[in-house]
Length: 437
Image (cartoon, rainbow, N blue to C red; front, side):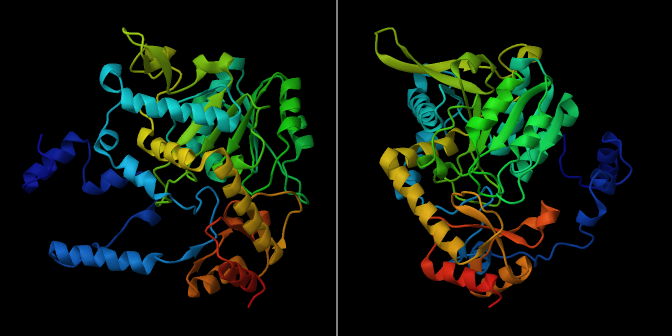
């Protein structure tokens, strides 16, 4: 098949094969306001050197050397140099799915270690070999709960990351999933568990709760678990800031834990790639999407690893598959594995304490919207969010996330995040901008 039409006749032939009358028909499904009606602003052909220099200059103009207080699921943490040293090795960078255990022991070992560390981190008994990201792990966990309970309802906290909720709603439209949303307390910022109790019933498969929440608040997992179990539902606990698990108690009261590991040495890069996880109790293991790497022995009795469980649709009959996930984020998950190995249990705790201390220093310079306990993010009220961020950009500082986009009732609020990378002088500048200076 020819991919580029060489004449008008070829062009018409290709359009006819697609059942279209014009090239514009290819874009008919897109909203009018996203269509570009002019040629791209690209000069005629340049040399490779000129192109490289152009992109380097654009990169420096964008955000090179900027401080950032923008969290909301993508966090600015230090990346140990060892991470890139390991993941840049050819055997990891170019490896394929490890179906053939006899030639994939290295990759299988790293995935097994990853799963082990995730279980230690979350307090669960089994973890899968990574998901695309936290947002796609959310509906996968909801589907998993539906299979376990044979129910169709899902109660979702309004303080769950809005983009995670959007992905869940997309799945729900075609899966017959019924979503009930429970709110948050206007004073503390924590999820309204009384509202949750009203929303959970005998048709609820899962309660989905994020902690720290999208507002950065630490939620009461034990009480949420008790409410869910009174109605026979499962509790799904979500995290987007993995560093918080260095300080907060593992969510052992949950039935399923899902999360995003971007904080563990995965640089924020315009939306990805990320690495999501699902961990659960052993009794739910066969309902996990994706795959599990397990430990075994080879023909000589030596320790070895293999794919113990693969539930994707290519391996078994389509109607029996638990998910249509066709790969995992093994290379990105390896970054997180190296990160956890470098920091260790005590190092991760110290890192979390730094995040907590810096966020609380920043909060002391601002007026908090909510009164409840928080980790390294909080909602601030002050000068108009757009004005605050404009002032900060002039000082080479990326400000917080204006919340009005997702929560109209909070259109005067900013979601701010401080990590170990936040310097005191930059935090002082944020405090001044919030005061309108």
